[in-house]
Length: 135
Length: 224
Image 1: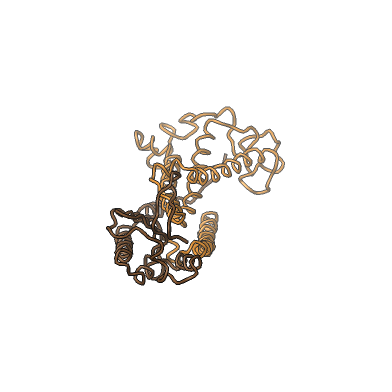
Image 2 (image 1 turned 45 degrees about the horizontal axis):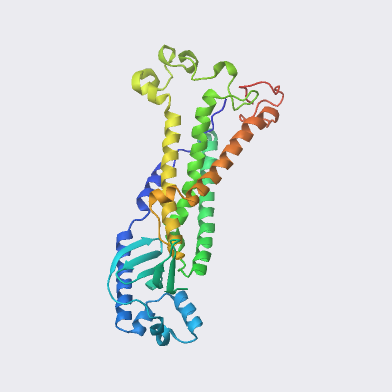
């Protein structure tokens, strides 16, 4: 009988994979949390220009297309929950979820840094979120 | 050098094939990943960044774990199960772990036997199971790596779909984890079962995975 031989290599790579997945997550959680805080603060201050600058391009495009006017002119009509700070952040890959006192935000990492992909989100029974602002 | 290449042809050829296909997978995976990023509103990433993503890691690990499981099970199964007429099987008389004489162990060990066989005690006990143990450890490491990288990739997708992320125990019980796992396992079991049975009736001249071309179908434990 022949026993198939296989390259035993790979154990080191497997261990490296274990160590690498999720590494640097702490640092990225902090930066995404800061963006979420800044967005909530901008909405509370009524600073639509600053808030819109923190919205992800695809979300902003979808919002402006739906409203028929610029983000700056129409963001106030959404009546997004405002103020408060982010209590908890989870980062997975280039996506993050920021849960604050007043709102739950979803963020995406773009070339310009973390941006808000969805805001004004309420959790539904099937564990998904209905968001006032999303793409 | 020439002799080294000849004596290690199988290992070198498959090592190069492995590296070549891994690079190919990385290139194709990177292009696919960036296509999905554009659709999902994310940013395109560089090739080197892609190599550190959980998406690439889970795709690699899920295949590795199934390969090592295949060899692990085959190594153990062929101790106790036979396929009459297959060169992959031993003969019915030798079912089981066999005697020390057949295995050249204990007082039947020779001067050429590996050191740990001549040492006796726990060293011989470990060495006599070292192939299975190594395959088992590599399988478990790969499977754990798949579950961790898979969790990261899955949660990234969950967040993109405005859904709560899941914990590791939840992911290990999820359809995504078992779909990735079982689709690899079934293909490995099919391949190994096919090889055991087809090699009873079919031949490949010169291959040690086949019986000699002229050998009877009923002949077991003979290669050529």
